[in-house]
Length: 191
Image (cartoon, rainbow, N blue to C red; front, side):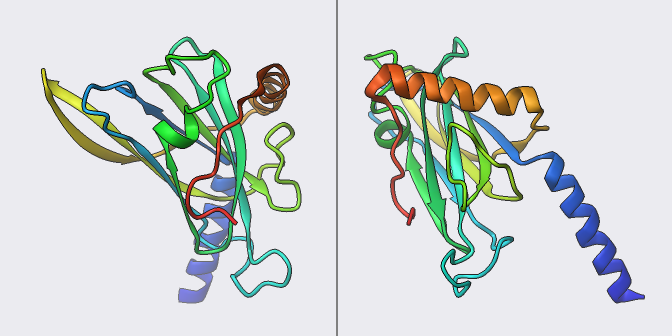
């Protein structure tokens, strides 16, 4: 009975994950006077294989889409992560260093991550699969001149066909128009 319960739980979780292959968080106070950075940490929990899996090493790509506070995409990229791997992205140096909209870089906005099949690994035409896990740090300014850092898990959201198509198309547009701008980098932990 115990094995049946565990198997049922795994199937139910997998079904829920398929509907939520999309993670969302925010960044704020990017241009703070302390020069404090914020980080996005993404983990591949090994749902597509292990580090020993031939050729892929259980890798999943994190397709990352960065928006400013006006809902304009400013950067996008893909970062492959092997099974059990950790990817660390700096908001200052990886996600908003070359915004399509130029400088100053946006002070706040949204970050969206789609788990993409390693065989695809294309932020302009994602092929969603389960499941990367992500957390983000935030620089808060509770009182003038004082900064504190908080961290929270990215939230899952239903990934509709419309949103999936929009992310890929907007990313293609940003990268085409940017001529080198609008492409984020993968920081530490990407293969």
